[in-house]
Length: 200
Image (cartoon, rainbow, N blue to C red; front, side):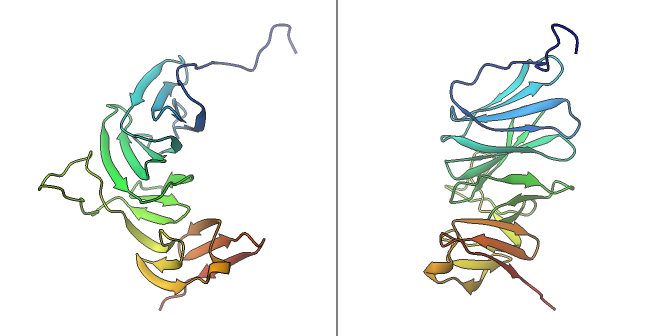
């Protein structure tokens, strides 16, 4: 190893609070960071410059993820929303009123859905939540789930947004994972179990 060699390529210091999540774009040109300061920042990997500061959340931002084409970014916050951002312009394209904090989000390969620990959210054909006949990206939309999922109170396993299986209190999850028709649950007693839907 040569003298003076360092593995540190960039030190990015702009957030005013702890950073909770970082994610690279799939084309490797950008890095997104999510912070307790309620912002998301998009960084140029080569130069280390901050290209965008995304503001709009009113709580800690817990998770960020790029779409596979690297044109959009999703952020999940303690304000119980998920926001979809245009990476180039920094504009918020959509706000989803989840009703609880999400800690793990990712896009599917086509960018039409977001995978979360409580289910898969469809980004197309999601009706606007309307107040005084106004709509737009700043007004939250109710999420539309597809496949297996968990209800907000974690008392039900759902399928396509419909309650399917009620969970007694001793089976209600402290953590969960969803993949397609499969729901994995971890409970406080130390048990882990899997529910799988087989629909004809």
